[in-house]
Length: 296
Image 1 (cartoon, rainbow, N blue to C red):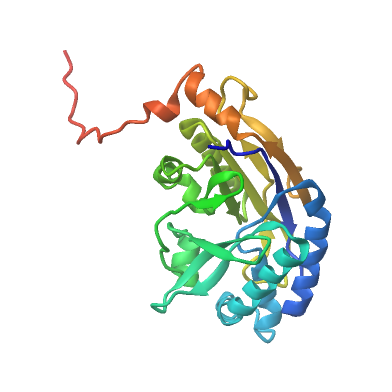
Image 2: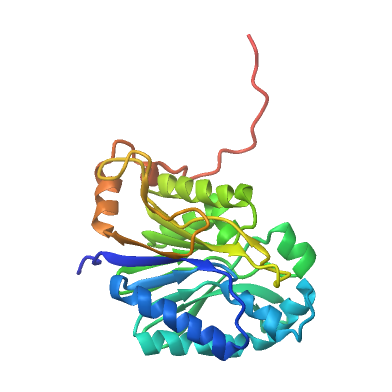
């Protein structure tokens, strides 16, 4: 069996803009992909990056509800533009997420993974933040899955999902050696929750985890008015990796690409002969209900 090859990963710290139409959004996407494709095999955008379109699509009504409704209606056309872009640039593309209507009528936050031929598969966001559940009415999506790629199996744990160990864990147990976590956070606290959770998931599973956020201020957008963060790629804090596990990071709140080449053989090696073996030693069975300890 052929070992997976290293992957050149490109993470876009996406500056929220003000496209006038889906065609305008597609032109901007083209410019970013043209810039990134020479240095990467897989390009990743942040969660809700395309929601910058909501302000133009909702007829000028600057409310979260109006922007969300417009995005849901336009989601098939936006996805089509994303697929066209992947084909045009012949690149693997994870273009962030889209609020989309599920077959049962619920609205879910859905991350496409698009091949260079334009084929698409999805990972839904499983855990909703209070903002999504209480103000946008977005529902819990499907269980985590994995994606077969030329570089082996990868997973996607969208933003808040990366804060829950079991979401990434089931993907790793299904063979994922890399977890992508596109994010959208409007405070430093929110960014730090994603950042430190991603580093913890890389430690626990002896895998790679990559995050990338929306950045910048967009007062014309009710949904994406403030955006904080920076991209990062993290690995286990063990042999063959930096002591802090940080493989690459962008500049805080600054737009642009962050690139990093990831070798799956290093993950195999550290899982086999690391200073510790977190991946192997993950508890296989529940601990049971804790009981009060006795003091002597």
